[in-house]
Length: 363
Image (tube, rainbow, N blue to C red; front, side, top):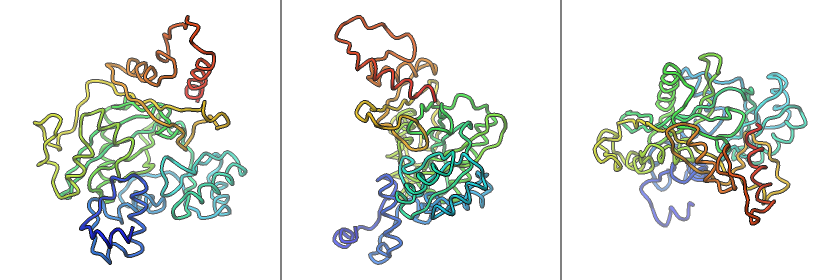
């Protein structure tokens, strides 16, 4: 990367458009002094802001500083530390890995043997050799907010989403519904204000996704993680709302403000107008376990899906039925499936269909 920068001499870099690899690369370029050496400016969220969201300990500290509740947790750098923290918190515990994509290396440990396996794997996968041992709240709701913020501090919520399988399954392996279906008005605005407060404190410029865990029995909530980049959730939110997130984010990091940008879809409203949905969007993951016969089919904090589909309907049931039909696994939906009468319908196809549905809906 340094040789490319030396040759091309760019004025700036956008680190929010290349996924996790771009963030990791930008952090390393800053640490090695390459950006300062060649006078390259980071456009959008600064490297310090990226570090505050990707480094588990820095993220926890940042959330506490802005008055955001977090789960009991501690960052560790070896198994002995992890074992001590797990004993303090009590099993089960969740292991989250710093600077990884799709929950890679993480998992839920119910005992010391599982803890050793997951922590060892996570430390190897982490860019900085760091994992977070966290209190497990698998039954809590998992809520996501997509936030856009410009240099002037203007912020909008593009979309909020709810994960059907709550916190026990990675959002990439979850059925995700937009907008959220079980939040009341108080809960929605409580989390909305928290999302705006967190992004402002970290210094997000451009697009950001923040995830919350919400206790279904009370108003208690905690901040789980933040992605200061375009992600799968960004693509879902953009398609679901008609809000061109990538385009708007690119304009924002180049210096434009939200009020002066026109939504290219509506051609009348500015980027400061929050989309309003009168329909339900359902995102359903697609697995391909038939190609990986020995793969562990249990879903958890590590993403295993190979793709996803999005369906739109007037109600959740309609959009869910549509999304399952689009998976191309031989089912018309979760229910009301037609009975196969043709001999061309193979036993293997029906077995794969049954495996996919059992894997997901018995969690």
